[in-house]
Image (cartoon, rainbow, N blue to C red):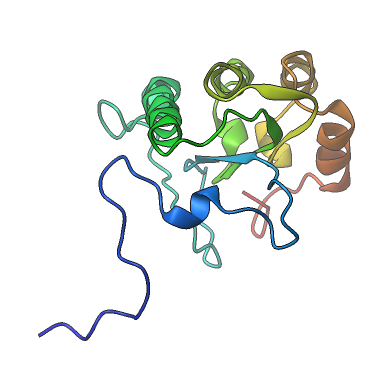
Length: 174
């Protein structure tokens, strides 16, 4: 027999949002709208990582890295429909963070396409901060340039990658 469920609000129905999604910030102001995109692919699975990640990039239709942008498009459009159904106003994203996993396991063009989907579904503030996680071994200057050209924050990209040492052999960062 399962233990008793925790006390709290029941889960909303399929395609619905919880009531607190429409709540104002504690001071009564409108909450900023931010988007997190999770890319679950990694070169290796780190023992300390608790995130949903996969080292197999070819897991089958809809779950493989090559299908990821198309699958994400459906998810973002469903999120937009749920927000519309809940009566939430359309607000441009103030921040977009692409995390994972290692998002830069995908081609830079895919990450830029993901940002375009955010623009399409929600809008993107003119001064939005757009960043991605990256491991030094999964990016190069051309990829960074493509990300910057596509709307990712170039200073933050260079800072994040420039700080991480490129390591080889045992103990190297995946």
